[in-house]
Amino acid sequence: MSNKLKWILVIVIGLLLALFAYAAAGPYLAVNGIRNLVAGKQYGELWRFVDFDRLREDLRPQVQERIARGIIGRVGPGQTGKAVGELTAMVTKPAVDAMVSPQGVATLLTGSALARELTGKVEANGKARATDPLEGADTRFESISLFTATVDNAEGKPVVFEFHRDGLSWKLAGLRLPE
Image 1 (tube, rainbow, N blue to C red):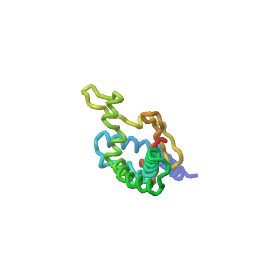
Image 2 (image 1 turned 180 degrees about the vertical axis):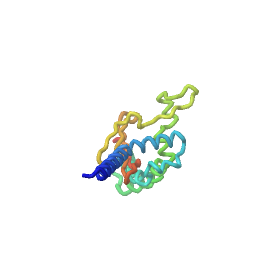
Image 3 (image 1 turned 180 degrees about the horizontal axis):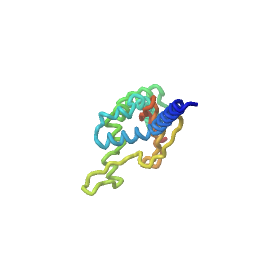
Image 4 (image 1 turned 90 degrees about the vertical axis):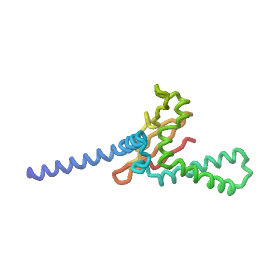
């Protein structure tokens, strides 16, 4: 094998390793990008790391199911499924649209001021200190296209943030709410 061919092979292998390293670091870069944008209050730029359409599609049935369970729990199972379904669909769409907006995602990722005050996370100047729900998250690759970050909510139940790969980029595109 000639020296020139060896150098080409070394360069190709190096580029492949760099590409693999970038792809493996992608979800961590997305998490960090979201943190930086939220910390800088650049909510309009979250589209770079959040797939709002997929996140809405993922959350809508979960929220609708929880609302339906709540209604059935209050009025009893004797009500028709169609009426409950129509009511939950009517309530769910605006709720999910508000949650899965740049401001809604930012609020989710920083927590509300009331929640911070209840947990005692207040700075010396009296302002509520921003929280990072992904801090200390249990992270893992579930597949080559799915990365999850699992954290416990205030009740100690797991909330799973799903990052999906699209080419070489990763975006928050799913959220598994606790039961």
